[in-house]
Image (cartoon, rainbow, N blue to C red; front, side, top):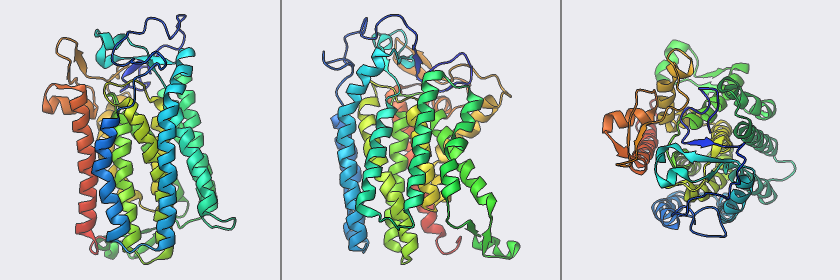
Length: 428
């Protein structure tokens, strides 16, 4: 969504129109984005979901059932959570068209800038559909407590604190979509949303010093105290905003969430299977219980947001997804691994820093240039990973560029697994 503030969502692909006097159901071009008179959007892209499922589900179940000797009770809880996440997936698929009608009636829509001066560029695309994903995720996560946690469970307080953070961040994201919050204020929103987790956190505040540094530091385990909670808050701020600014293409925001969530899920299963520490296993199981619903609901949204997008996710989704992965990494005690999974987002943030800080002029939209004759994008000098990729690779279509960027995201996750394997026993 665009705003009068030049730093409002600089990598957005859409311009919102919340005050238009015309009805959102008028003048919508009848193309492949609108195939049904009953729904304002196209049908979900089931073929895309089938390909992704065929690629990811077999390795996951291989690790869960065959490769690692996971306890029966723990495996049962993971499977119950997976079944509930599958229900959440289908529920999200059904609810997104319903929600699209309501947001269009309230003039909450946008135009795709990367399709400007083409017939698809004149279509009113429903905005802020991330609210559907967030609501279904919270319902699944809350109901799952009935099957896994008891009233005296030591994880119950932190689990509900995590859900409170996610709910708070989702609300603030929707407020941002509606009110166009200035960029400087947006940086503070995750800090506010993370307060429930920071106040309820009762876990350790220590870090394990890498073995090569132990002779220099003098201790193997260092207690950071309040500084650890400060680190938790900063991690939440980074994860939330990094998803938000690494955007600008159909499917990129949701796609990077799906890739990172998949890597997190595999990492957790590997750690559960390889460990003999019950508390360590529970910490990673805790992460699984939040990651599977996130992955299921995000896949449902991706089926509508993939190129050509028939809905926009809005800041509601990017804030929700970033905060969810932040609390997963914090409470699962693998924040270092999470940051390596976020390597493309770290690079994008470093590229964006001069413009976001005001050192270099920041345009309203830091998007590549679109040529309506060829349908190709050309990189600009703006500091984003999207533009840098185009300057390196040359002109690309929006879909191909998104695939390249998601491939880079998957590569970063693969490098993280490789580093953990190579450095195991030497680094920590």
